[in-house]
Length: 208
Image (cartoon, rainbow, N blue to C red; front, side, top):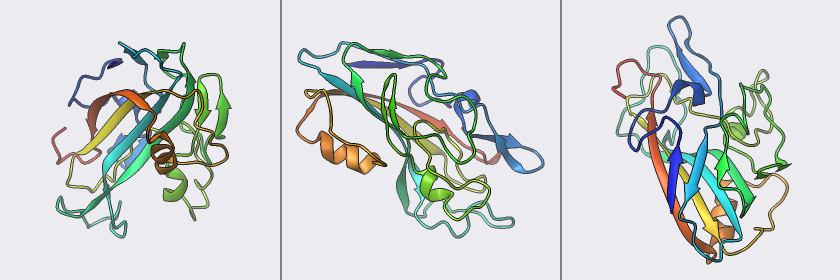
């Protein structure tokens, strides 16, 4: 199976219009266009009954104490964890393209509602946990929300955009399910998968 993302080649920087946060000279970060990217896939295996899309950043600091703190930086060697930016399941088998902005246009403060949409069922992304306790931003963040790595992180972040072809029409997940729930539910049902990896940083001292 082959995955194509508009204006994103393997290993190259993610276009700023797909980002939740963009560089800002005064405040380090400002909200971006936060458009969900145009994705299309081909060479789908016979027997495919649905698709899943997962987008995750594999370079998120495992300890958040120094995240976005003036006068501090997050060292490259700090252990990292996964952060899911898009969890979309039960995409019908006749859909092999999702248009730009179809799941997100702009930052929705407090999050977008998870659940059924025209292109599948939205799960919850990890901004839900990241913004917990923040009175200005907390909420349930469903669907796509793009890159916004710490602006003081010394490591370049890598984002894996993956589409999975499954032999089941539904993963039978509902409510506020998350990336790891999907990974578990897909076990034994993956016919094929394809990934495009892009990079992103808000730290002007890190080369993208």
